[in-house]
Length: 271
Ligand code: A2P
Image: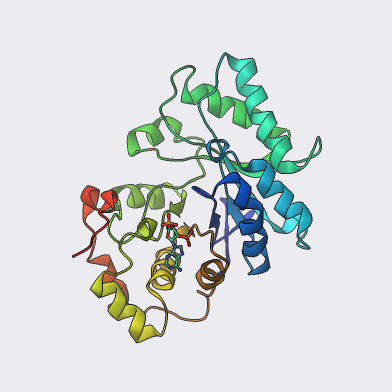
């Protein structure tokens, strides 16, 4: 499936997203243009990545209409009170949405840890923009079950860090039970585990690359992977994931390589 419904809002989110985390602003427009050209219709950015304007510029320049692209951003820590919070959100909506009538498809709270204000303040501010149609869907990022419990009434979507070495099964089950869609950032484990022999074997058997296997694994788990790449060839490669399927044996081998919390550390050298 190439898109998933978001609750019963009528909105759909493309199941493969392009992650711009760590792509420097000056190369971000070119990377996004390349991604759009290779079929991505979902770009995941954030205020912290400082590239909202570049993402918007790529969408404006590409032949793909804005309505066909799903744009996500995330609010970072802001200075000041509620007015500043609203200003901060509006700035992103205008930067990404291309002006006063613009909109953002998905606005996430980047972290549950804010030094001033509270998650609830941010959520209420997001709800206001949602009601005005400037933000089509809202959600959270990097939240644990405790944080989610507080927002249970509202949360619809958010991306924990998920890949075969760090599966966060309890969180995934919680999301399933509560009808929350999951996005997986760093689905390639930041590239650090691509030479894992178990992964390489599955890749060879399927005639695909280790990165394609990891992205396909996320898709088959029902997560929304957001692989990042600055390289035109790898951007293309990472989108070629709808023409094969991992069988039950492959899936269970990958299910079995979970290392729990340890798996989140991405050691540069693998076994
Ligand atoms: P690059 O941007 O030079 O392609 P994640 O999405 O898990 O955070 O992983 C991103 C890392 O994986 C980046 O360092 C990226 O480097 C690298 N990467 C992305 N796609 C591939 C691929 N198909 N093969 C190998 N490495 C990749």
